[in-house]
Length: 372
Image 1 (cartoon, one colour):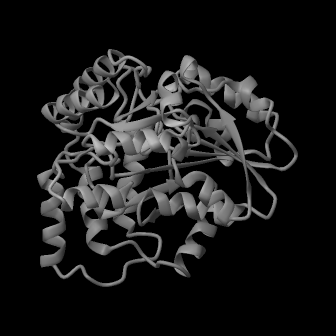
Image 2 (spheres, rainbow, N blue to C red; image 1 turned 30 degrees about the vertical axis):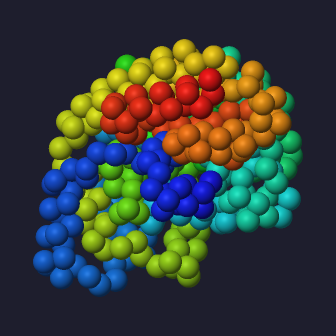
């Protein structure tokens, strides 16, 4: 897909990319200024491997203020993006043959990380009719003596699914009967929740399960800082220590300048997030309306993040049942998307609505024309 998109652009074609998972807003000025100040002050040396103390304190503020989790700064690790935190958690705790339950559709890297660590991916299939959510009964059916982790991403990529507090309470009740099963809660999209309710996360809803939960967050999506590569994680002390050992012997500390910028992100003004949410909400509504008006396409209304996961089942016979062929067909008509099969789904594609409304309007026009 990427190679073909590059070829088309080099041939002078106008390609609209709705495949990138990052906000299109500029990084807030006070964050950029903090990075410049750090350079001017010569903050270009090694830092502690698991992050500067000031950043851990700022991350603890973030966990408490934005996620409702009381996290001791000593029990926080700072990583080079949320992806590194996820990778370290699994590599530190998953042994050969351990089972990791991963709700599908999933973010593309989850199953690969599990397999790298020697674990076995156990898909937990979710459906559009349920807004791509599972409940405790769905989870209970998959737990075995080998189950090590449940991966929980809310709001989710690629579906935008969110888990309200009452659903998390049901999941927590089940987990109390299975103390060996841990939960890796990926909350990187937490600020982008359009339900009007406060973001719910398992460590807040079920604080008695703290020893079974690792929560991951960061600044990439909330502050348009994808290139800064800063993630933060909090969880049981033994796990955080193990993650630090891995980091010490792999990447070392996250970039010092990025850490300074992340401090400003967590400690600085947060009011702009409400404006960003409303912009994303308007874009979501535009895309959902346009997609559901195209014959053969349908999508539920995502409750968070900035993705629509689109079903194209009625059209798949035209593409031999291969949603990669469908995605390439749309690319030839000027829109880059990602096939559903890349996320453990089928018969459709994911689009990101992190683009200006005029761009989204044109993209929807091209998709409709391509499928007409």
